[in-house]
Length: 309
Ligand code: GYE
Image (cartoon, rainbow, N blue to C red; front, side, top):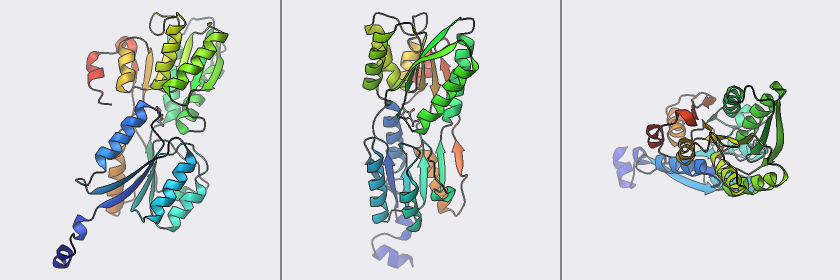
């Protein structure tokens, strides 16, 4: 009864829900915003205890973290997976321990769907298609469109979907050609390094398709260092993804021509899923976040100021 609970120093009504969260790393502004959203949401004031693990870009670290969460008997395991594959064994262990697993952001590819409870994130293929639809209009009438493709972390859903979109676009346009395709690991430093080396081989480039804002920043630095101009009215059209505050700043500055939004504020979405499960409801298995895209020529200071991350 409630007296006993009080005497024990905390009744069941005060009990915190323990969430173990395995995060990818800190490779980008998007990721930083995503981590912050989780930390801001899963606070003691909101009834949670968050165990946050940064895997530093290594799936092995994520698997170790998940095993530690199982050992600690957390109430929920939340995973932002690096790659799509290789999760079956450890998720079976979580299932055997009776701990619900929620996947957030990127998707996983497992043999049995019941190895995770539910997922919330973005439709990355759609994001790629949105970028390609813009390129189709923007570049119409050009004889040849030479595209440099900076990919994200190979094997991550964000990379797979955005790459599929561009490759389908290339197939659908006989005058489009991907002249270079390389990963920049979703980081600014790698994006710059890869773009620099590509520019040493050729400057005959119409578009650089960057699978996130940070790689776009690196690519723009490389383009400018080579004495060329990036963006609206420049030598190379820049297409990017995420539309973070820093990314939209570069879009307002006309250096990124087109920026496809990817929303990182998943904390409240995951909390809502947990609340549903706690209330005995079964949440939707897959929940896609609605997203927009921004053309530099339609960008405003108001849009930028409204972007909190
Ligand atoms: O686009 C990129 C980050 O998985 C959607 O990961 C996420 C991607 C995001 O590093 O900036």
